Length: 215
Image 1 (cartoon, rainbow, N blue to C red):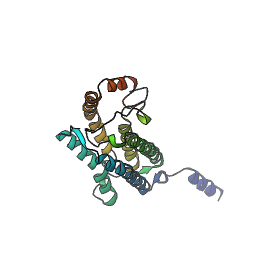
Image 2: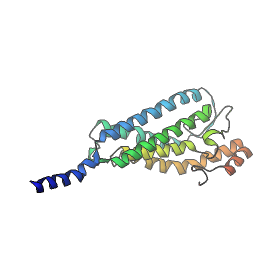
Image 3: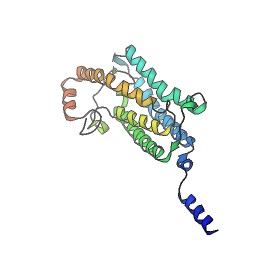
Image 4: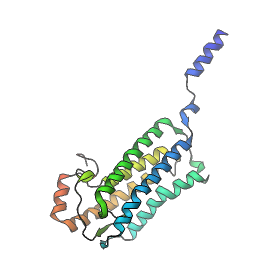
């Protein structure tokens, strides 16, 4: 009897592997909240900036392809993985630590996503555009880094990796971002330099691209 009680207590104190795995719907629900929050943040800013005419656009085939890829990576495949079993062969267990990391990345990413839009105002565009009366924004979250919205997207891409326990839908946004960012960064900064000249050049010299004081 005593031996049975000791063995029972030891089994209770040692967590089983299955107990370390969460219900995947916790991650899916957190991702859905994050996705809807992104849409709610962007919608009013997109509506306001859309009322300002575009003075110059550099949206070519590559830009359109990037936007389509990002849409597939952030919306289409994640939703398919959540509402259907088409990608279930790539599912894996959701553990507590990745889930918590996903929540933190999503919260930080959404805050920075909101602040970036709020500080840009009507100067924001989803593609490489210069609007009429376009202003160079150097305050708020743009004071120390030139691309805080890209940083927010990177954080949200990490959140998707952690929250969606699927080898396809989870990392796809991060892979798309890592492909898009270096190819878009150069043309975007050249466009800003051609538009704002010395003002943008001075801004570049006192700021970093993505990480304050680092890069």
